[in-house]
Image (tube, rainbow, N blue to C red; front, side, top):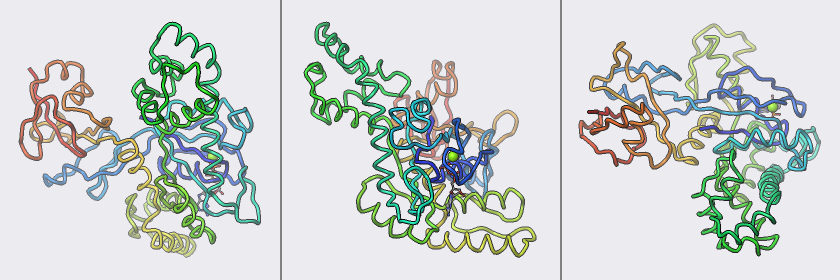
Length: 392
Ligand SMILES: Nc1nc2c(ncn2[C@@H]2O[C@H](COP(=O)(O)OP(=O)(O)O)[C@@H](O)[C@H]2O)c(=O)[nH]1
Ligand SMILES: [Mg+2]
């Protein structure tokens, strides 16, 4: 699973990315500071299952802190999108390709209104809803461009040869994580008929491209820079005018907290509305952290962890599942070392195969370690399950 950060230049994508991953990236208040896509691990936060058994887990990947388990997934930071990107403007098409592999987008929108659609500072209040529409437009045109490239030939051949439309579109969009089922469900929702694609008008093709984009690149809005003077008004208006999930964020604050935590100055658990001072703070550090705390208090935290959790668990519906032995420990004495993110609808058998093909093949039953109850191969996984798989 891969989630991509999108947004116009200077909205705070790299700051969000660094705060979420603590990877080294260039943060700068000039457009296109980021040129190549960066990939790193970000984390979703769930209850540490070991805590239910009076233990603390020993994650092989990710980490555990104050009873919370942080499970890694891949996050991608890309260059900013500007109007015309789908026609090659800005860093254009090449970087749209970077976005192909994403399962979902976190759209980092700048609430401050202090920068224009190209990320240049202005004295006017630039309404962030315009950025939202611009990005949507560019993404739609990107999808439309792929469809149109071969549409005429493609739709005619399909009709003549009575080929399967959904299958053919999925092939055309290979690499963009578009499945046949996605295409079928878009057709159903939009009332378009794939068998007569050759006769679709321009508007039908557009409508189809947009619906396919929305289905295959679902989006959540990280409304960033909530600390700025115009942000509150802009946020209220955004929430009124758009029906995306919108979460107000303070990426710069999250980054300051993570840095201070890393240097042992404070104890901060991402997702909490607060921190504990551990080390000796200079007057300046103390003041800076106080300012962060003020914004956090108004915003109920920095919002960063909430965005990550919502993107993975709600937008994409993934499930965090622990493989477990009867005593919770593996052969080396590690407590619940693994936790895997499974796609929505996964079953106990899917999970067994995720662990190892042999475990899938030899599946007899699974035991829910919270209840001790045995479940069969068709059992639908539930968020936070711990399962012991018994094999032949
Ligand atoms: N006030 C404020 N500034 C922020 C916040 N997040 C990022 N910035 C600033 O916005 C500018 C652009 O940040 P960057 O992450 O490089 O943006 P990108 O071009 O979208 O990757 C930098 O000066 C950041 O310090 C925030 O939460 N609040
Ligand atoms: Mg950047």
